[in-house]
Image 1 (cartoon, rainbow, N blue to C red):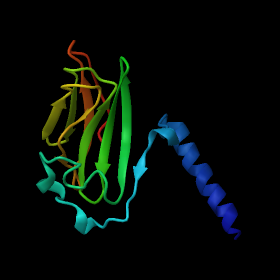
Image 2: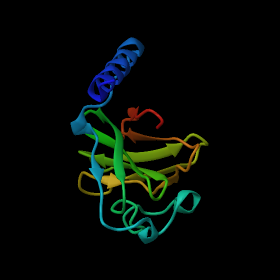
Image 3: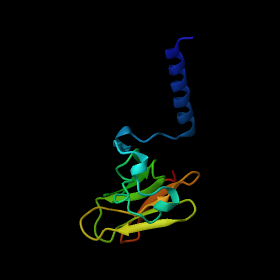
Length: 153
């Protein structure tokens, strides 16, 4: 069998599966990946030990595979769900905010971390554990009480 034909058939099957379920992948521009030459041994925590810790000071935001799993927008603000494969942890990153806007990350057990914008337009939350089988989501909450969240990933 021609391997290209098999690959094309597999791609068609995946496309049909997405089309029939109504799910669409985020555009390539929405998924940001950072990879560095650092190794998993360079990170300062993993899974449960990352809870409440800063993703930058632990090297989780810059070491290994770091993804934006999803982003949502609300009244000019963007909330990004950030995730580190090496740290097995997630955090919320808010851009376009104003002082008082809040970035929140939560895992499916209810563990929650958040941080408000105090000055400028950006902030990020401390991390929550996202070791398998856990999932995480990120939310932005405005001073008015309006809120928008990502799905759990």
